[in-house]
Amino acid sequence: MNLEEYKGVFVFAQQVDNVVSGIALELIGKGKDLAKDLGTEVTAVLVGYEVKALADELAAFGADKVIVVDDPELKEYRTEPYAHALASVIEKYKPEIFLVGATAIGRDLGPRVSARIHTGLTADCTQLDIGDFPLNPIPGQEQKHNQLLMTRPAFGGNTIATIACPNFRPQMATVRPGVMQKAPKVEGAKAVVEEFNPGFAPNNKYVEIMEVVKSVVDAVDIMDAKILVSGGRGVCSPENFKILQDLADAVGGTVSCSRAVVDAGWKPKDLQVGQTGKTVRPNVYFAIGISGAIQHLAGMEESDLIIAINKDDTAPIFDVADYGIVGDLNKIVPALTEKIKEAKAAK
Image (cartoon, rainbow, N blue to C red):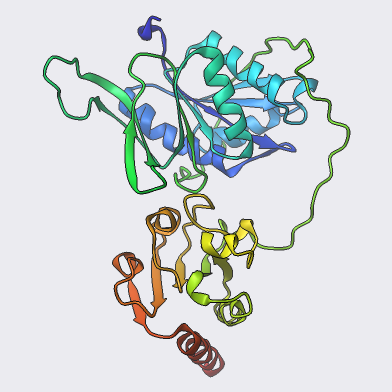
């Protein structure tokens, strides 16, 4: 493999029902930073059917170029045709870096594509940088420059690993939604659009979709919420989440939870914050009855303001909290809710 042939930062621009997913725009934003360090450009790879019109949106958020793979076989996501599309793009255009969102689609697609093109894949990354590898020089071993350094939690979140792929290209990573930030939108921005179709010959690996049944959910996506009232094991029962809901109603927020709450069956998985849940960046994050395990902190430590309520004054959550209250949440939360209601009524 001639590594010098591989140039550019490519991003899989995931779309569903002809709507660009937020993770695609986040990856373009991060891709711009990486491309700047490498002196190259960001290319978005848009895969689907009748999706060319979405190229302008990708350009508005920073894509310099958009490669469109448009075919009826790509109307709904299916592993085989999508993997064929991305592998074909990589084989033709030879990107140095290829980023995929760690969504349900990305987690299925990324490993299959990396296996087809014989390169490595670092999954569920929380940080991406350009630097030297090994990080510190090792006598007798070449230190390679301008490598993609991919950081992710390891060993159940108990340590952080930085991984590189110095000998194969592209350097591939899946990235958790909500971790990276979108670039500011530039109205009227245009990208170079190139259409590419590798051809699709359905085979016995093609799944036939008989029917698509969409569920209707009224709940707010916690990743979009500006204020989150999050409960953990310390809430003690599903009934006690009523006092958290009262607080959320008073402040105009949304209730979320830790993994322990989901494991106990008190709340659905969609509301889970943390390494195995969702990464959130609200303006205000109430951590109530949450100890602050590293797996949970990975999903909320970028919140603008963190308010922790816990009876254990040694709980790790207080290390990241801006404000902390030590005491019984069953007394503190209702009192706090009442004070907020009084303040709103006095206005």
